[in-house]
Image (cartoon, rainbow, N blue to C red):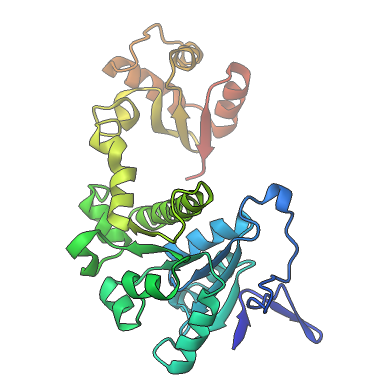
Length: 318
C-alpha cells in the first residue's frame, strides 16, 4: 500500500504524492542532475522517528531517489507531530510493508535489489530477527551498502536510549530543564547523511567493489556537539560561555538582546557605544557597564546602534 506523506487531495488526484520505484527505478518528480549530486542514487530507509527520516530528507534534497518502508502501524512521528512528519517526508516515496511477513520480506528484498544504500535505525538484535544483520544482508545483496543508526557502538548498541539520555551522558543537560532541541538526533542525522556520502564515495573511487557497512551512534553525535563544552569554550570561564562581556544575552528595556561582539573590533565598537573606556572584556566592571547601558535601551535603539556601528546582535521579545 502506498501513502503520500503530507499530500492533499485535489479533485481526483493527490497533490504532492510520490510513488515507489517502478520497474525502471524512476521517480515521478523531475530532478536537475546538474545541481543534484545524488541524482540517480537509490536509498531505501527503514528508519523511524527523527534521525533516520532527517538523514533521508537531506539525501533527497541532494537529489537521491528515496523510498521508505514503514510498518503497518506507521511511523510514530506521524502520530505525535503530523506537521513534522510531513516536512520530514517531502518528496519521499512511502510504502507500507510488514517485514515480519513473507510478503513484506519479499517486497523489501525486491526493492533492495535496486538500492544503493539501506538506512536503518534498529538495534542489532532487531535487525537480526528480520534477517537484516550485515552478514546476511551482504551475502544476499553484495553491492548494497548499509548505514545503521544506533544509540551507541559495540555492546551498548542494545541499550535503550533517546536524545535526552545521550545529551545527558555528554554533559549537555546541565539542569532539570529539557534542552532547547533534539541535538543528538539532528546531529546524528547529519552524520548519517555523511555516512551515505562516504559509502558512495568509497564505491565511486574504486576503494571497494562491494557495499560497505557504516554505523552512526547517537551518543557519538552528542559527544561531537559537546566538544566546545568539553574544551571549556562554553563553560562559565570560557569566552563564549559568559566570561566575555561582548558575548552574552542581556535584558534590555523591552526584551532581551543576544550580543556576539566577540572579536576585538566588535568589542571596541560595543564599548564605544556604551561609553566605556575599558577594553578588558573579561573585567567585572566591563560586564556591569555593558549590562547597565543595554538595560536602558529599547530593542529598536539597540538594533539601530548595531546597524550604525556594525555590531553583531539580535534582539528578542520577552
